[in-house]
Length: 94
Image (cartoon, rainbow, N blue to C red; front, side):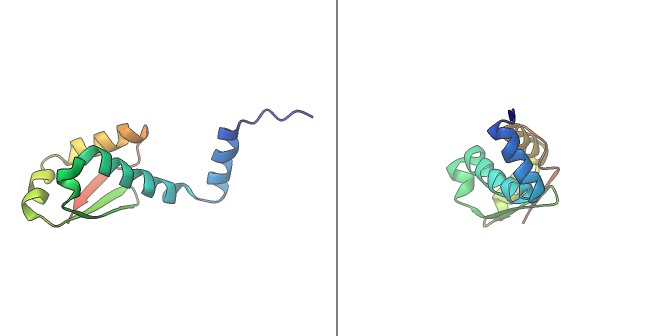
């Protein structure tokens, strides 16, 4: 008997069966935020949380928060492109 499943297929099945995708998305979104935003924004980023496709970002600078508010659509697009799928549907800056 030959099993043609690839490791990728097996991992996808494990992730699906054990409902691990939300946790994996959480980690991937945090990493994407870090790499896409750079040191300037990261130094003011207190927390990044993904919940129900909404990215919550806590910032320590109200000026930066206002600035990023204008680019929310761009942030969503950049993160989803980085992850190669639609994970984030909205961004809430706090």
